[in-house]
Length: 249
View 1 (tube, rainbow, N blue to C red):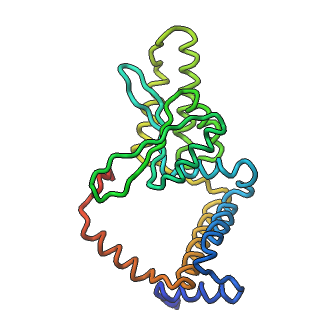
View 2 (cartoon, rainbow, N blue to C red):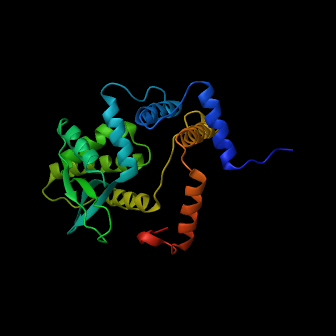
View 3 (tube, helix red, strand yellow):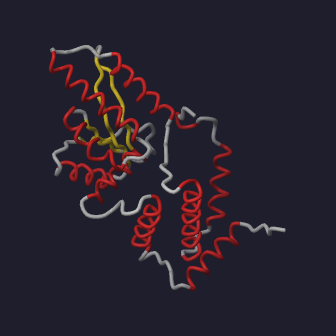
């Protein structure tokens, strides 16, 4: 019969096993450990994804997947492509802005309006110009995961718009262009995220297990009371109303 163990047992076992191999984590080396961990886990999904000039683009693509939005905004009878990345860490957004500017892509940084006075100040990077949008999506497309479909559809839309505008001034949207606008809108509302499983479901499950082992190891070495923290979070979530924070789902 299989034994049942609580979370603290797994945390202790992961920590002890890692420390036997000399993998002791301290707060001082935590940033380096996290970067090495991210590299190794991502290599499990896609070998050789980092390195050289690709590193910053991969990072920005990940940020776009998690914190960004690729959408259309309507203006009169036409539609403009709108790309934005939001976060409360202004330094990271400044770095993204500077990195893209070096590649000839202009994004503007704006402070976000707070809903409550106690909210942390947020910031938003925005890209509107057709040429900048096309360059940005062209650079990030190979590394996007969750927003890959939106990026491909928008690139198709921009190419079609260029051809139509070459024919006549202020050309109306074609049937296909309107379909693209609708598809992107639906994808954004469904929050579709597809993870390419390079080696199938078993490999993906193994990588998720790896993530947990590393997290448990960190909790053990840094004396993080993760069980108490999780319990507190769950108790707080129980008190929250359904669809709190303007959630759609």
